Image (tube, rainbow, N blue to C red; front, side):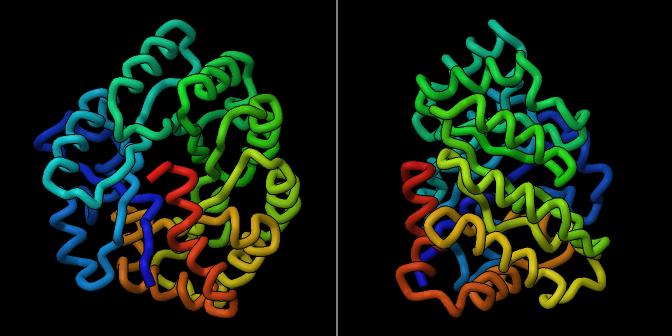
Length: 277
């Protein structure tokens, strides 16, 4: 099956300023580039890749990934890091990103911020600017922040939103509610889609089972449906719990009951549409 990976990371601490968070995950802190995933994925290497920011200085990171893309043509789109809530500085950053053709969207990582962070006026103001720039916004949050995410999406109806990792539900603790209700409310808004990604790292890294993930995948399918779900590997972060071929195989198993057209949408068509690949 042809597939696009809508969520992949690359980093090299020798090429860019040290990533402040990688010291917390030493097993994956070493260099990860397209050559690395070629080796690890083998025949399961994706047809196209969407790079998602990793926390390096934003413009340096964009230029570094552009350099990678010059050598690896399957690297087809960039979701860049900017601070979306800094007024004139945000506007200037958005203007700069428009000069980089591979940039399709931005992400301001806020999963460790206060629960209402993304619904604050300055955050909403910055996100609103993305619509006229033709850029989408990736939402990286944890499940208790979903009410604020819902408010943000409602306040920015012209912006295209992509929810990363299913809103990071509490799989490790077996928490389904109120995540299920929040996802249902969010999915009712037409300007948001969701990534089927990152679930294994929300479970116990050493003891998770496919059966533990199944109810969360079922709910994503129920709420967003095959036309609004995008496969993402979340490599190499997912390696903390699962190798790349295994997660791809599981995602295919979780969706095997769907029609061929529905599977093709999740694994290829939706990402091509959303990220304009």
